[in-house]
Amino acid sequence: MKALADTALLQRALVELVLVGAACGALGVWVVHLRHAYAAESLAHAMLPGLALAALAGVPLLLGAGGGVLGAAALVFLAARDRRIDSQAGVAVAVTALLGLGALLALVPGAPARLEDLLFGDPLGIAPADLAVAGGLVAGVLLALAVTHRRLALAAFDAAAARSLGASPAHAELVLLALLAVAIVAAVQGVGNLLVVALLLAPAAAALHLARSLPAQLALGAALGAGSGAGGLVLSLTLEVAAGASVALVAVAIFALAGALAPRRRAAARGSVVEALGGA
Amino acid sequence: MSGAIHLEARGLTTGYMPGAPALSGVDFALGAGRAVAVLGPNGGGKTTLFRALLGELEPMDGSCTVKGGTAYVPQTERARLDFPVSAFDVALMGAYARTPWWRRVAGADRAAAREALARVGLAERTRERFGALSGGQRQRVLIARALVQDAGVLLLDEPFAGVDATSQARILAVLDELRAEGRVLAVSTHDVEQARRWDRVLCLNARQVAFGPPAETLTTEVLQETYGAELVVLDGRARGVAVHHHDHGHHQA
Image (tube, rainbow over all chains, first blue to last red; front, side, top):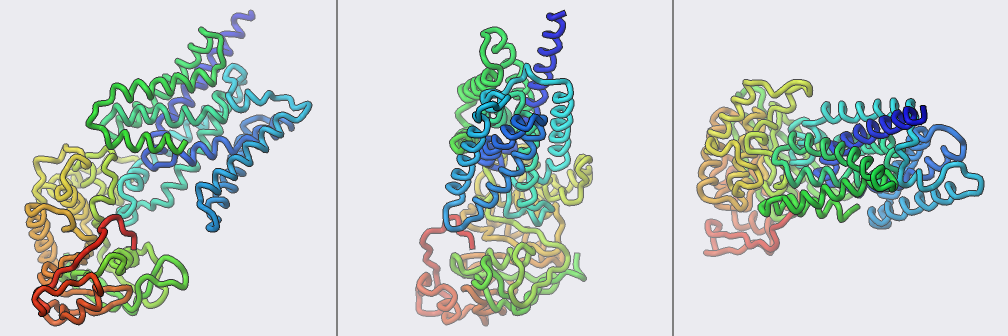
């Protein structure tokens, strides 16, 4: 009976990590092409107060994640607009403040959830309802990527001419940030709000190394993200280590391997990837 | 392609920050089949004018009117060279605005993209990665994209900057064809000699210095007012002028 329960737990963890990995991998290709790695990291980290508050109040973590991302987005937006200081510095201060506030809330005496679960994820603790919600969010992200594909391509390739070709770069940017928020909310229970950044950027960066066309990069990013999720879970069970961290490490290992395998002629692509990861 | 095509600015003042216009007093009109060279120093307002004509910048004063649809051909180094698209993919972007998201780009538009690439002399290179082409070839691909857009008004941002002689000849031939079809062209350029081959010339230096036929407009006085210290007069008369450029990199305005 216990083995059966364990199997169900493992199955849910596997499905969750594969779904979230696929969505993050495909979305990540756009994050790297539109040079928004820093925004991805900021949103993911700055949502911690929402997660901690949800844990304290005993409401579902997904709800806290959603509220946390909205609050973080609002504060990051305001910080970036303050013209008295450099926008990156403003965002960095806002993000660090929110991360600190989240840690403070998560560590108050009597807080039920452990801080590690919020930061690094707990895929084995996922309930069927959580999985259903995450699956819905993932489906939403993939559908939105399909709907906005050409507009994102115009904004990423040639922002100067995008408007005359029927796409607003500002709208594309907003779409990308909104999808990032949704993907992070979907992924946070499985891999945690610190490690979701690895799942967003590493498989995508690897796909940029290895694939030559945009559809191939998106498909490969999704496949490598899903593979990172499944491989990370297997690794964590084999070595009896934390699942979220294992997923992140597998994703980064795939990126390193892709970097080593990528032909030299792709130096331009490599530059942008390094730049993207350097911002993270 | 003619009839309703028209490009006009009336007392146009525009810019990026409220109360600080980057360009003022622009006043000109072009009918079907006319081409204007837009001359001016770096930061003189050429790109600013184009952004206003594209509707990306609101007029602070005056107005601008564009009839027949606008295509914008940016400088090739503004496009991302590491983006994974072929020359054909880029030409196809000209049809994106009329393609619903759930549909593949229509067969007629795919044929138009191939035809446009052939017209700019790149029929053999449709599969080549955009970033792997030479500067002149990339410029021709961006012009092919504008051909697929099939707009009445084409705004070209320094289409001859850093372009080889073969590409320049090919681009000039295509632009002449477009003009003959009744389209309106606005070509920003640094080359005073080349500006003489268009119907009109518009000189900008934070404001409109002059507008008119090249022979009457391109006087030493006008050029001095347009370029200031950048102008080098070679033979003391208006024929022999050169513009000395400092850093011609990624200027914004």
